[in-house]
Amino acid sequence: MRPNALFFSVLLAAAAVHANDAAAQGRQACTNGHTRLPPTVNLRLDNDLFGGQDQGYSNGIQLTLVSPNLADYTDDPCIPRLARWVNRHLDALQPAQGFEQRNMIATFAQGIFTPTDFSRRDLIEDDRPYAAGLLMGLGYNARTGDYLQTTQLQFGIVGPSALGKQVQNAVHKALGDETFKGWDNQLHDEPVFRIVHERMHRYSAGDAHNGTWGWDAISHYGGSFGNLATYANTGAEVRFGLRLPDDFGSTPLRPAGENTAPTRHYNTGDRPFGAHLFLTSDVRWVLRDITLDGNTFRHSHSVDKRPFVGEVGYGIAVMRGRWKFALARYHRTREFDGQKQTPVFGSFTVSRAL
Image 1 (cartoon, rainbow, N blue to C red):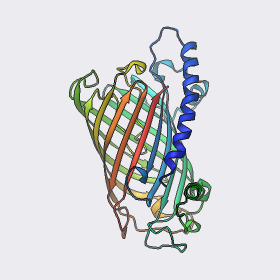
Image 2: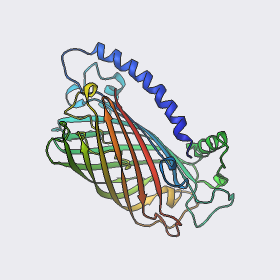
Image 3: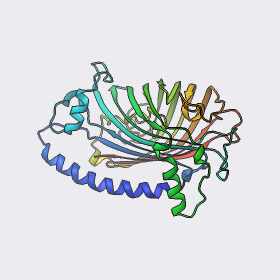
Image 4: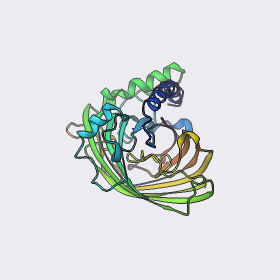
């Protein structure tokens, strides 16, 4: 689904214009002397356009909104009313007291999964099922110093109602590309959920964000529970470059990877140019993955998944002012018995502090 990048780039541009106007009005209305770290919006596109194959995990799109720090300004009128209302009703997900930063996260995502042979209309029993998921999530990042923990509740639907067939075919037909023929064999509609929790530690060699070259390393461990996916995972990321951001990773692909807690040390409007290279890894012990195991309560296509899956990614991130761009390429081990090729795909992330 290479053309998707074009479509979502247009959407991002329109959203950015609207966000600029809204943010400017908000800054004028909220000038009571406090120094506030701004909310952040992240748009991530995973696709073979950036390197890989149009199969397996064929395409993913995720929009993430990260609120300002709620630890000190929970009832601040400068924080949107909806965010304050949701914050008051999410006690079960909120971290314990004692964190210097607490940021609410809202995510909206779609993922599309297809087998290798796009031309076959019959059920390909030895390849992964056709599947699509449409999800939204709510949760919190909580930070103290170089420690961050994140908890997210994600819910949505897997199956025809997730619109994977329509999205993929519409884009392919518009550009004259071959469409995948086997969508009639996709998983049945099933409501899905999972709760994801991860903890991250950052190890830094000095203040590399202060205009110098440097490196840092971020370790993580955690897991997911639900009929969408159940697993335990651990891994790390290493970064080297100029003016490293004071955050916890650059375009990580994990569900808990949208860990962009607004940084403590820069004025986003005046942030000078910075860039760095990164290498990231993750290992998972997978007990359930609905896109491989099939529907939970109905008979459906499934494959024999492998319990242990590893992933390595590498890329570059560039920052200037309120913007951050990151381009990455990921290599994953085989996820099920009989998988013909190891998965390879790319990811492009655009972040902006509003």
